[in-house]
Image 1 (cartoon, one colour):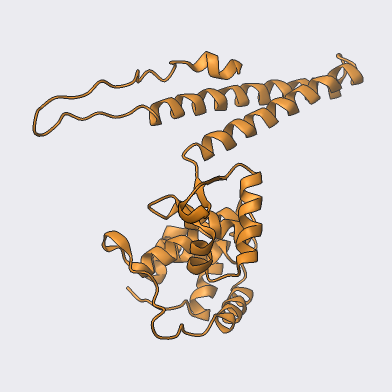
Image 2 (cartoon, rainbow, N blue to C red; image 1 turned 30 degrees about the vertical axis):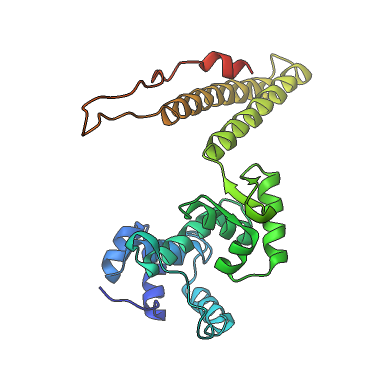
Length: 264
């Protein structure tokens, strides 16, 4: 399988494949490239509907010219734990960062969040983030302040009075519940329009249908999020290889405590 950067001809083939409605995996197969390479290339250059091979090629050349010089001797990148492939990890981090960006998160915030997600400890100090991402302390400070305000990370005390920034295991639960609440507000506002526009009018009927649809979806999302959270937070116990015994587990029922949390 070929390695190295994509050529201009390969980018043209990617553009043609997208125009033909081909999946990333099929385009990658035709190029004899990993699917992740094609996905990352498209997502970081406008997405499937706006990708242009010429613009993508020029953007890659600009990024290459802007790259920092090789680090001086003695400042090698940290060795990867668990025998991981450093290049594969770097490519995955780029893919994850690009995905977060296309979901609306600014670039530096996406890079910080990806860094925290892919760190085994799940937390890093500001200086560690600076070292890993090779950016200024001010950039990290701005990024973590934004992520904290959105509830995506939290601060926790560290050694020598250095705060650590951590990703919460509940981050996607919290963001899902927040989205469901926003949907509930949309439904409530739509129903207000029913009374204003007149219940028997076409416009009011349209708004009522919107409210009913959004209510139904938001309720389902909330229930699913609560059930998933309950299951994921239930400690999975396995019999001990030595003793053949197992410790007590929490109630695995997804509905356990559901109504109490929803009412809160």
